[in-house]
Length: 293
Image (cartoon, rainbow, N blue to C red; front, side, top):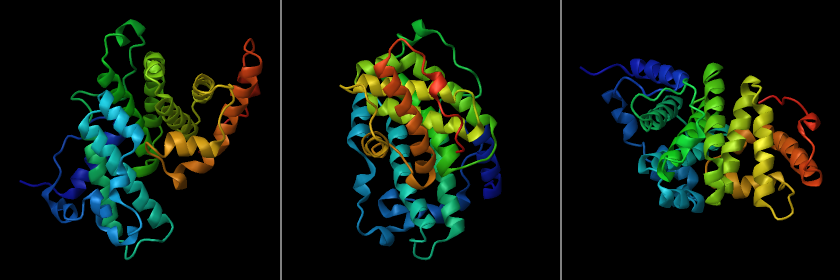
């Protein structure tokens, strides 16, 4: 017996809020949507993207992560979300020809279903991670890369592609990402994955701002540390360069994220610049406070 899409949607919302895999299979009533559910066709809006190629869905950074062990299903979801962001931003700018809101919502749901389906069986994003650094050395590169990127994709979905206003998953996801960065930042640095670390840190920072989390200062400090390590001079890059080099090449939405992220990056620059001049001081006192997401 097939289930009504309404049950799929309720199950999807529950899974997104709880940061777990959905319980129900996708309803066959989504079959009409699947006819256009193809990122190569811009999810049915290819005629509105004649100047864009669907082959732009990947990037040098994503390809390098695949070489290091990024799972194919996670890579596919990233590429889907990259194209989907173009579609929803075009809708925001009234640039879609004959947009169908019900179909747009259905495409959104199917992409979110696939994202959550990449999570391991028994995954529970609400449970705090064990902060045992010794265990991280036993984790292979493909394992920690997939784990940390899945957390970041969940954050991006909460705020951009499948947004919800329910606060707990933002708190849980930010805490989980912080724990993962603490465990794996040295390994990522050793591999030269500074752009990945910047992307992760920015998403964590925006996640904390969405709900006024006290972890905001930690993510600002983390990002300033990454900027110091990657730069010769120790100065933080300008925002436009950060977006071009580190964010857009993985997954980003200018419409949804630019305003808050640009403002927050000024705090990162301030901390990085002060620390580069005086390594002995604690820079937390110079921070500007919470910025609305």
